[in-house]
Length: 367
Image 1 (cartoon, rainbow, N blue to C red):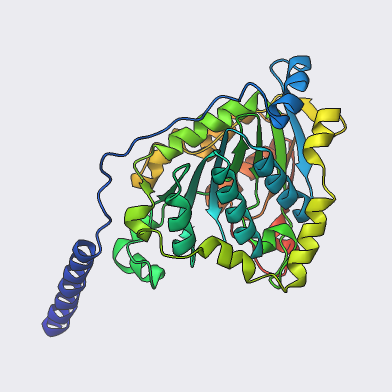
Image 2: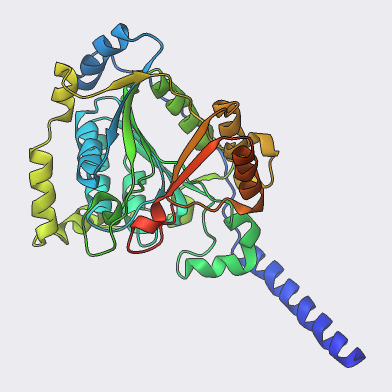
């Protein structure tokens, strides 16, 4: 028995030493001399701000919301807003795939930077596989900056980093926002990837996001700034390396020149007139009160008080539930505490309905 115990202890010591050694050998670069920029105010004049301003004046203190129900419209909205930008684009995502839509949107961000638009891109590093050259190229642009939230220690075989840095790497950023000129933003469940925009060979996901203008936009911008300045948000270059020679972003787009996908999406963009519809008042906006909730970005560095997490803040925003609760989620895992909470609501006579969107896709949703 003592021999077995000694063997187990020896193995434990070896594993612990290996983890310590790996953390030393593959330590993240220190964040030094980082300047944390802030969201820019809306420009005095642009096609987008001109389209929004009279709506906002007519609905003081309210947010105009238009649902983007299908993936094609959701992608077109992002591209059209980016093309209309004259001042700034702040984009924040959990997943950004190296596929058609991911390549097109990165190319659009680069072209915006070429026009003089300031571009800030904040990505959770869990969803950036294969993008290091493209992100390095964008980050090297004088008008663009890329940061990675809780980056992985290893760039190749990234998942092996979990073996020696699991606790840190298990804290991810799921935020998704796309804010242009401080005048309009897109929020919701969609990451950037073909399956989120109804194209490509992978399973299509049922998802939803919204275009919003008005009161909530500066709140989204301020929340982006919180994450941009978070200790867990690392400048991209020390992680992904300097920009490679050539044009990785352009090469990614050119991979799809002969694909029907690209022709399909070009037709979609040509047929969409989102900014013009907004300007003419023909975009179906619902003007309402909107409350923005999010986790404290410090969660990337360790445990935070429960009241600073989204679940608690969402409960506070909703307030007392009296008669009915309707929930929709692409990834519904309530846990024992959540099940008890919903059971308590039902025991009080509250009608509870949950729509789990993961049941509507060919593969489970994890967003």
